[in-house]
Image (cartoon, rainbow, N blue to C red; front, side, top):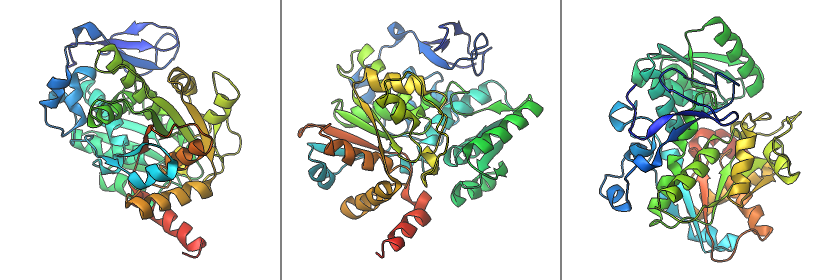
Length: 397
């Protein structure tokens, strides 16, 4: 494998053992725990000036803090997305600043590209001929795109409720699409059955591959650098599996470890009240969630009733002095419309849980009047144009 100098291997978050990334590809071979890329930070010599001298054109500008060098990456210049000032929203929330991290401007329109560029790079490094995953929609589209870029076949299992755009684009990218009647769990069961029959398929499923959260951590690097190296007070993130939240918290700790920053942003998980296992676990002081028995939300991207990495999510929320918030689908869709009409920015319906959550957190007095609050827009509004317009029509607008 072609790896970066500081990357030392994959460490299990449960048993603590470290494994050679060339030999170990997915979960811990000892206890089946989640593996996390580990680095020797003493080997990383990276300054603010070094980064400022580099073009702001992709997430791979942070290659010293990633497992693979830019030269080896299966990339379409993902990342380097805009951080947009939102003065009207800041006034409405009663905070100093609101910054909108617009991941909808990635190659396939979502932040999933950051995870899949890293995961498919690993697959290519391991000589995979086929990659596979189940997904609520966007991650499947991204996987098929990056697999096509790498010349690898992709097998994507989506629930029937996944958006038309994601289904269509998996096909357009040449992916083998299986649409499963039901929800994300049903697609997961079909994926598991297929994986059992095809031992040569390489999984790029969240927290099965060690690399998806690693790619997504670059969002936090960018936010801090784009904000003139000022760490925001709060980051509000629409949370389903929590991959990006876990990654960003890791990134914040890395920047502090390297002496590039001094603070950690408070991380907030925002969910729909129709499926809020992380919020429930946080509010009850638990270290792991209980499965949400009857998920019921139009926000399919965060309708994850059994987030396997909830201990990592809950640790990030508590370590960062953050929190968790759930709001109704009605509030979430209203928030997407408000962002579009007050700031002109297009926020995916699922992603608008971050905006809705921020309004609720502000109502609770969670923010100070001089705080800088970052809203993570994880996907483009046109991914959910039918949902948003239907919501407008239902209100007679």
